[in-house]
Length: 215
Image (tube, rainbow, N blue to C red; front, side, top):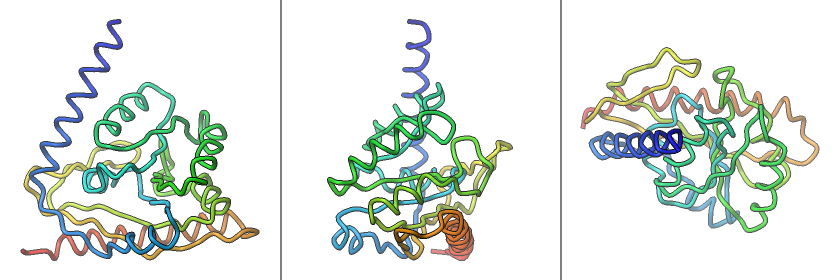
C-alpha cells in the first residue's frame, strides 16, 4: 500500500511538472509530414532517442499513440504519466517481456495503429538502435518516421541517455525526418544502422533549428 501510494504521488507530480513546463515552451515544429503518411498507410512508427523524448512527448500528446514501457518500477511510473498524456502503453522492453510486447503490437498493427519507440531504451547503449522497432516495421509494412526534440535552454542530466530537460519558457524545436520502410527480407542490422543515421541527422537538425530560432 505504501509503495502504491508513493507511486501514485510520483506519477501525478511528474505529470503536473511535465504539463507545467510543456505549456510554457515555445515549440517550433518542422517537417510535420505524418498527416499524409497516416492517410496513406493507416498508421506509422515514430522513432526517437530516449534522451530527447521530453519535447516530442508533450507535443504529440492526446493522439492515442501506442508506446512501449519497461516492466520495471520506473516503467510503471512512466506508463502512468504517459497514459495521463493520452498515450496507450504496452509493457515490455529489450531486456524483459520484449517478445510478448512485440507480438501484442503486431496484433494491434492489424488495426492500423500508430506507435512510438525509443529504440535505444530503456537502458541503452545511448543512440544505438535495438532491433525491435525495425522488426515491427518489417512485419507490418508501416513506415518509420524519425523525430527529435531540442531546446535552446535545457538541463542535460548525467544519466546514460543524457536526458534533455527544457527550461521553462525555452525556445524548442520538434523535427520530423524523412520516413523509410523496412522491406521483407532486408537485413535487420543494416536497417538498424540506417535508422541510427537518420535519427542522428534529425537530432542535429533539431538542435540547429532551435538555436537559429529567434522569433
